[in-house]
Length: 452
Ligand SMILES: NC(=O)c1ccc[n+]([C@@H]2O[C@H](COP(=O)([O-])OP(=O)(O)OC[C@H]3O[C@@H](n4cnc5c(N)ncnc54)[C@H](O)[C@@H]3O)[C@@H](O)[C@H]2O)c1
Image (cartoon, rainbow, N blue to C red; front, side):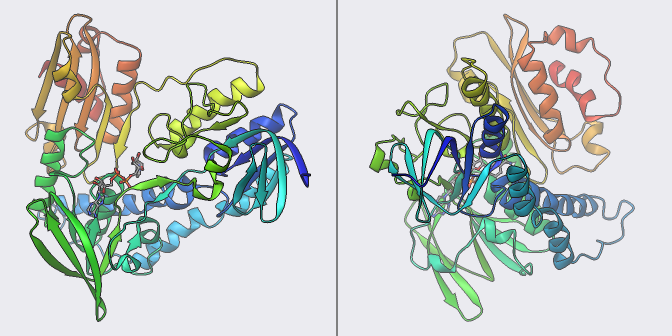
């Protein structure tokens, strides 16, 4: 016998979970929203928002550094603790305000972890909740790094909470989070060494652009241990030692003030005990769903980072929530259609990508042309004394449309959205070449890129 019954139970109060709970009550359903940590989820508490606040400061310092001797005679004074206080102004109000918003809309909220008792019932801190529909939106967390001394590692979540910025830091992992963390710390005055398993950082982006990024990083003093993994961490007085093993089996030891673990994330599904009710997951522990976001159980759905559907990105979760909400509460039969998904790494400079990759183009038998150029000599780069500005565009020559765009350098993080529109709307490249963009803006480089 359940203590409480709802038409809809949502587990996970991040942006996608909140969106579904709100849509449920708006449709006149009774709804519960369960959250084990603070209400708000990754993006406003441990991801996008705090990261962008730190990135804005790091970018300002990075740009000054590029202009030293070109008007700037020195770097501005900087206080990490003031920056953290500014950042807390964004994060601290979130848990209370988002929970209050849910309650004000008539959603019953629970602050604890949910575990399946049977396929319709969840245990939440000793209370049994029964849902006609259950929606799982539990997100991801840093994956446990199974090496000796892992208790000395700080996660990327903890990096965003650090009271001081150390003089030296080792960052383990060169994906989005490792690269963004390393670049923020380095720009704000920390000596950084990155340990990456691949030969370039951001290896999910274009390989040529990633190589240029590493070159620019090394030129400004970021050190890399490539094709390597961290195998052990030890405390050495106030500092730490990190063993690094390369692919040839050679081990070196780094000494540093702090070691930040950015070596991947895993879905938050363990506490749900999905096995107990037979909900299927894939090899990355993501919950398997169909293109309507339904799991292998008819009344259980999953979306956001914990689901095997699209990339683990906030706008992907928000879009998935809009599809699910229409289907569950408005009688629609929409299917998720993510292609193409623009994605950005807030590196310094920024890296951005949308659509077909160069590797996919190579493997394709379509009539495609690749426009790759390192355009450091273009005014757009020279005005800012940019370390690097490069792009790779992939054009379907038969259809005269852009199908992929990959950018590195100033303006990349915004430009990618314009190129996304171009790809999505299939605007012919001949048409774009005739357009007049405001000059000298980042967007005005698009016509030159297509001619390159
Ligand atoms: N700007 C953004 O949009 C943004 C920012 C942050 C995170 N995210 C999302 O979060 C997801 C997770 O990002 P992430 O950077 O944590 O994961 P990731 O999987 O992209 O990168 C983790 C890296 O760590 C490496 N690694 C694993 N063990 C290691 C070891 N012992 N030593 C050294 N390296 C090791 C892996 O090979 C991998 O390259 C991404 O897929 C992304 O979608 C997006």
